[in-house]
Image (tube, rainbow, N blue to C red):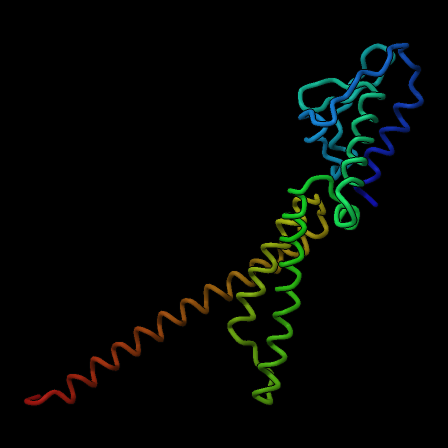
Length: 201
């Protein structure tokens, strides 16, 4: 998977560099460095610096050796394994990650549900109909999926949802504009009827 390539490729590149002879530093599993380590990024997001003959990684304002970086990856894996089946299933390392996955899942439910709603309404009317709720569900679902794909750094998902998002937003805007026009027309019609029926007119 793409998000696993970054740490693996980095590990391979660091392993072929001659060892500096220094013992690996002790990494605190609860440190901010470990918590903020992002393994979802692309290989181009890694900041590599060379100090003499050693290739190191820039992370969170610190320069890490190969052993230190690999130790942080190992702790992230241990954190994921300790989280239970859900952490493994959703490939997350913190409870906060569940929120992002929930946003993506809810967006997908809305996206699928809009088609079910359109189908039910069409079957009820015995003709093809696109109800207003279809566009609202489309806009909400696309927004949530875009947020999820941005978090996952999935450019294909972002592009796929962003193009449709403008169409959904435009249709929602047209629906709201039509609703305002109909409301004003109804109010004007009621006012005309009141003047017509008023005594002495």
